[in-house]
Amino acid sequence: MLKSITEDDDQDGVVLNAELIKREQRERRLRIIMPATALALALLIWEALVIYYEVPHYLIPAPSRIGETLITDGPSLMTSAWFTVKLTLFSLALAIIGGVALGMLFALSRTVEMSLFPFAVILQVTPIVAIAPLILIYVHSTFAALLICAWIVAFFPILSNTVIGLRSADHNLRDLFTLYKATPWQRLRYLLAPSALPYFMAALKIAGGLALIGAVVAEFVAGTAGQNSGLASRILESSFRNEIPRMFAALFLVSLLGIAIFLATSWLSKLVLGSWHESEIKRER
Amino acid sequence: MEQQRNTDTGSPLIEMDGVHKRFGNGTLAVEGMSVSIQPGEFVSFLGPSGCGKSTALRMIAGLLSASAGSITVNGHPAGEGGDGRDVGFVFQEATLMPWANVFDNVYLPLRLAGTSKKAATPEVEEALAMVGLSNFRSSYPRELSGGMKMRVSIARAMVTRPALLLMDEPFAALDEMTRFKLNNDVLKLWEEHNLTVVFVTHSVFESVYLSNRVMVMAARPGRVVNDIALPGGYPRTDAYRTSQEFAENTRLVTKALEGTLSHAEIDH
Image (cartoon, rainbow over all chains, first blue to last red; front, top):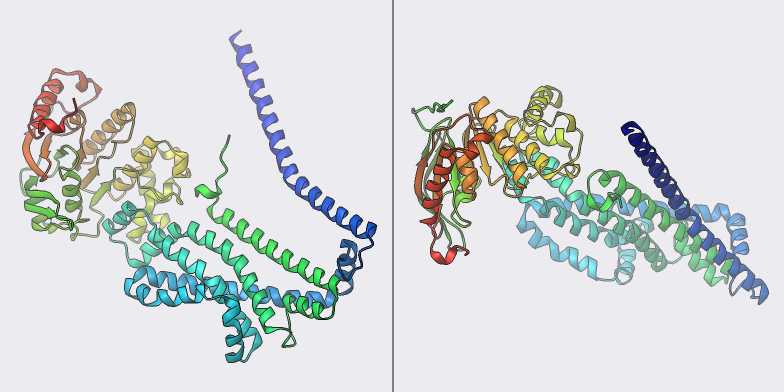
C-alpha cells in the first residue's frame, strides 16, 4: 500500500516535471516566433501600403525593393559595412583598454582621479558633433580621426563604471585580504577585478552601442571624404543622389550591426556573470 | 566527566596593555583595555552594542590600530607577525566571494600565500571535511543556506591551521538550532586543534556555553568591567545547556552584564 503511494507520487513528479519542461520549451519557441511574426507582419503591411497607394520608390521604397538594393549593391555596401565594423570595434577596444587602465589608476590614486577626472567629464559632456570637425582638421588620417571621435563617446561609461566597480568590493573581504597580507596585485586580481566585473559588463553593453553611434556621427561629420567610407557616408552620399532605397539598405545594415553588438555584449555578460551574479541568474518561479 | 582544559600559563598569546581606541569622529570606542589571553583559552567578549567588543577584536587582528597602548600577538605587534596565516578571522557575515565556488573560497588564504591549487587541495579538502561540507566543494555561495555559508567561512579561517581564531559575532544572524549546531562545531575544532579562540557575542547563553572565560564589557566608553572564569563542564555538549552549572554561570554573567547597563538602556 505504502509502496503504491510512493510510486504514484513519483509518477506525479515525473508528469509535473515533463509539463514544466514542455512549458519552458513553448516559452522559448514563443520568444523567437512572436517577434519574428510581428516583424514579418510589419514588413508585409509596409509592402502592401506602398503597392496599394503606389508610393514612388524615391519617397518610401517597399521592403522588397530595399532587399533588391541590398543584393545588387551588396559588394559595395559590404565594403562600407566592413569599414564601419572595423571603426566601431577598434574604438570599442580602445575605449575598453583606456577606460579600464585609467579606471584602475583612478581607483589606486585619489590625486590622479581628482586631477584627471575633469578632462574625462569635459570629453563626455561636449557633444561629439561639436568636437569632430576640429579633430578632422588636426588629424591627418581620416580613419584615425573617426576612431578618436568614436572612442571619445564610448570611453566614458567604461571609465566611470570601472572606477565604481573597483571601489565596490565588500569591505569585509577587503579586510580579509589585508589579514592574509595580499599583495596589491593579488588584491586586484582576486578581489577588485571580480567585484568590478558586473559594473564593467553593464558599461560594455552601453559602450558597444555608443561606439557605433560615435562612428556613425563622426562619419557624418567627415562626409564622404576619403576613399574608404563607411555606412554613414553611404547614407549621406545616397541622400545627395536621391537614392532612397540605398539609404534604407545602408540604414538596415547599421541597425543590424547595432543589434549584433548588443547580442554579443549580452551574451558575453551572461557567459561571465551567469554562474554567480544576480543580474544574470535565472530565478525559478 | 568534569574535565578542565589545560591552558598554558607561560607567556600570553595575546597581550593588550592600556589600549585606547578613539575614532575620527571623536567616539571613544575602547578605553583602557588591558587583557592577557593564554594559549588554549576560549575567551568571549560579551556586551551590548557599542561596547567596543568588535573594535577590540579588530585591533587584535591588526585591522584597526590602537590610538594608545600596545597589543601584541604571539610576541609581535598586532597584525605584523608572520605571514598572516597564524590567525583566522570569521566575520559576522560569511563574507564569501560570490563569484567563486566553495572550494575556491576556502582555498583563498593559501592562494594568497602562494600555494598552488594542486598543493593546497589536501588542506582545503580537510578544512571542508572539518565543517562537513566535502560534498559541496563546487557549489556557489548563493546555493547554500546561511548556516552552510558560515561553515565555509569557518573552513576558510581554519585552512591555514591557525593557532588563534578570532570570531566577530559569527552566528548572530542564524536561527537558534543552526547556532547550537555551529557552537558545538566550534567547540570541537577548539578541542581537536588546540586553538585559542576569541569570540565576540552579545548573547549571554552563547558566551557561557562556549567559553572558559567571559570578558563582560560596558558601553560609552567601551571597557571591560568584569573578567569571569568558567572553567568547568568540558567537553561541553547539548546536555550542558540544561545543567545546573550552566544555569548558575548564566545567572552570574547576566548579573555582571546588567550592572553595565543603565535602566534606560534595558527594554522592558
